[in-house]
Image (cartoon, rainbow, N blue to C red):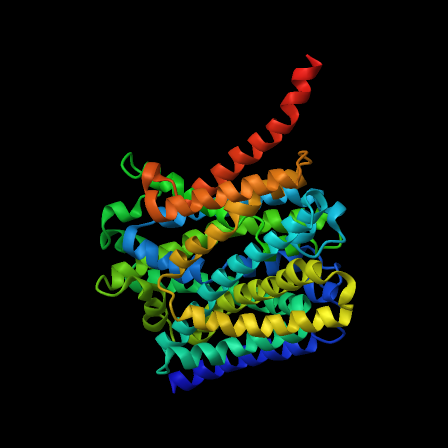
Length: 465
């Protein structure tokens, strides 16, 4: 009886997402609308869709698994992401009014660095979006296979099909409205797992008594300080201004609403990341003999009453669906707007671009299912996907936002060096000086970008002197 009630709740939730997505899909007539809606969303809508997009499988299932395995320090390292959101909201969101006609990161880059930079940005945007999307799809399959006696492939295909349908038909408008529903469900459901888990364990003090003391540490020791700093910076840089988050900066009615929503999303993520991480410790206290990646699913299966289980599973599904939908839409928009469109110029009509974006959504969505079959811990997959964004795009993109003079050659120099440094650390030097490939890549890009600019300006200064 309990299974049928919980299954019914999940089925109603999935059906509600599908219907909401289909209803809001009407009237999409251009690539612009498919990408950013009508640019008239309010503060709450941006807060909900942004938060729902970044609270994905890695920051929930992966977070709980890492804390189960290594302690709360992993959850604290995730706060690098929270700091990033607050900084983006405070420093970059107020500058977005002058990019009101843009629909992608490639559009911004083309203004300063030209069409080649736009195409390269589009390529790496597709790569990072597909990598993170694959992690979300893998999480979605893991959730269904953990709770129900179905195969991973079958459950992944069935659950992700709903996302593909409404993303293909309705683009960003459908994504936003389904994100709002999913945000409200996850905001209640996931903290509920922690609260009821602590109750089952006999209180916080009892949880602390049944886990190794070092797993409770919120601050790094001398021995692991370097590792913690590297992880904190990696989470801070890895997803900064990735395509789906940048798209949200184009969508509000004005820059003030964008700023408020982005800062609030960063602040909201702090207790959320810590609560989800602490759920991993609760699972450890109750069952220290399971695989780490089962920490959160085990807690849901074993501490929640009938009906609440279905609601919380819906919350876990909401976490994955919202993040997957955002990255799926951003990948298809980047592919069409930043790769296909500049290559074909004016030879493609707006209706053709829209059809291509919908086709790309369908193809990328199905391909991500295949990629997800090779996923392990979702947080590890996210860290790997970060290598395809920040080392190439972040430094020159920030230069545009902060009006730092630069040219195409500076972009190319930074991007090439960033890629080389990232690959070097990934294959040969990983772990050296506690650098991650992302940190090494961003650092190399920054130095090369600066040297390229200096090489152009220094001869002029020497002649003037």
